[in-house]
Length: 152
Image (cartoon, rainbow, N blue to C red; front, side, top):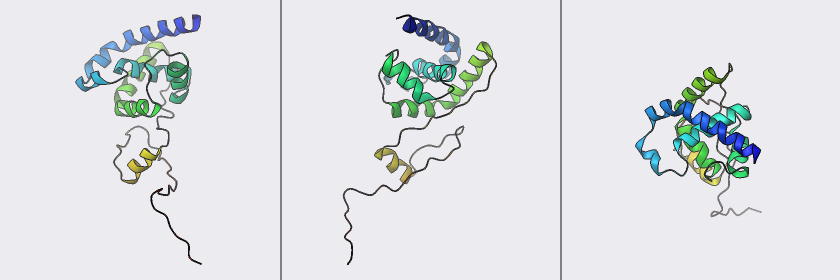
């Protein structure tokens, strides 16, 4: 329990530190979400403090293993982090000025490949990130409904 208590103290300190910035940008539509905007930004900060910005590791450690935050799907977490990436970037710069000197990196803020994402990328219905510039690679995904007959 010492590990969980240590993280809870750190989470509370981070929430107090980021409260003025998040309050300024907190949208009214975020109230209906499973994970609050404070918790979302806190997960992003903890990923940078403990896992060098790798959000998947922070998700597995803090949400799945230790259950410090409400249970949410990884893709939903990444979707919301991408939606509020400008706010996260601003908060991270503020926190790193307060806590230590260092560069802010957003390493792996990409969703896990699913059939739904292939459809979104195929029809260009997903938004694009203004911070993350690397293109996602999408392979060939054959349709399960159509069958092609070979010729002899």
